[in-house]
Length: 252
Image: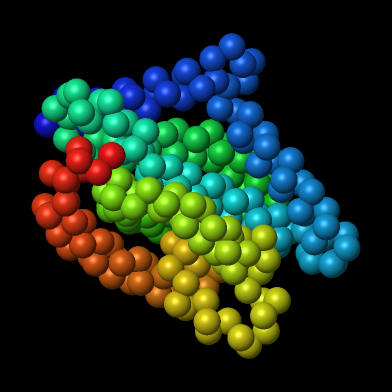
């Protein structure tokens, strides 16, 4: 089992190495791209719309960091089995290895992006206590587990429905603007209730609130929602994998 877990990790590191071969900064270019986007959006919202920078900039950067991970994991997982067709047909690797590799790649990029968080904490003098660290660690475990399972499900479904990547890409684009990533919920006034039905709102809250502060009750609600989502995905993943994983070699 250890070797099977090591395989997708090694594959993920190798793909990252190959992708950024001969570049000076490697995966850090993605972090720089995110930083440039953050600077532009921060200027627009703080200078044009007069949103307080000490509130908006930490909110924006944390949102972009975790959104980038979610988008990368979900979109790429929907085509990872199709792109791995030759390996699937010529090796005996379990099907879950390929979506697992996708999530590990997204985690590698997340680890590069996450260095921006200590900078934000230091610059804006955000107080991070032991309880906030514990809340974040609990949140990141639930968060990662959810995307491990979701990626596995999407990978199998994507091998059957080859248009799924385009569907996921468009859905994620809509969700990016309808989820508080680049805008704050306070802009909606009293019409925040509809966000309660947006799973991405809860997933980001679960990680954002321990970092930048916020209502602990909102964090608890998001954690409960996320654990319920995780429970559903465990059952659904079991059903999809048991029933359809053997069909993947015919579908890809």
